[in-house]
Picture 1: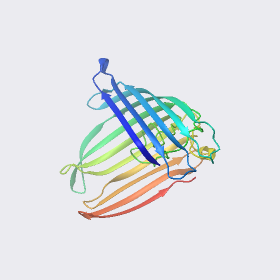
Picture 2 (picture 1 turned 90 degrees about the vertical axis):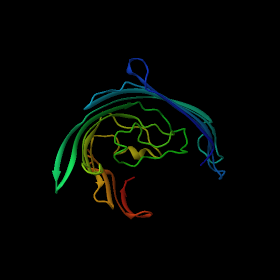
Picture 3 (picture 1 turned 60 degrees about the vertical axis):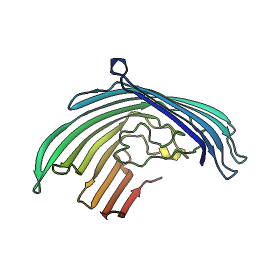
Picture 4 (picture 1 turned 180 degrees about the vertical axis):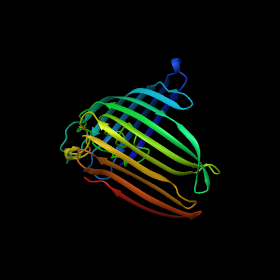
Length: 270
């Protein structure tokens, strides 16, 4: 889809009374397509958020609440099975993020390192909304990785807001080179506990057959192994279905400026 046009206005205030912080993300976009058999639409999104960051030298706790509002004015294609031409969606998003930071000096293989230990708990509650009338313009499922473990939405874009009632408990350790500050190694192990089944999907309800049930083991390993080689890997394993839900692994070799070789593997069933 082409965006003709896309306008965004974002605002942040971190100095409100009582230590509160506010954020507002808004967007207006017109999705157009060269093919006549595709739905087109104008979409308006507003996501006001309010949080209370509490932190010390070795800990943090951040409760957060927001409402994700979307409005669609849809031009259906002649081939579309849907007849809805306008729809709105309001989804409250609640989260509680907390963590601790420990660090120590260590010596391995003749080198000095700063080793960290970072336990973290993240609870997310997003109620389910029926979103089947909304076409998919800029949305897909996010790949798994360190950045997505504690994300509010399992989908990119704004056409799907994934429902959630789950708790992620994880611990991360990092080995930071004492001389250069380079993160030589990071490792994560954790578990995600689902308190209710997921109901929001992209294309087919069969996507939910193994999603959002039981518990998931989360593990990741990455870092800059040498001056030229970096690795990154992540796996998501469902203990109830005894299957791997997602797996990503990549190696990056960069011997010099403008010379890079990447090798990656991704496993994502269904």
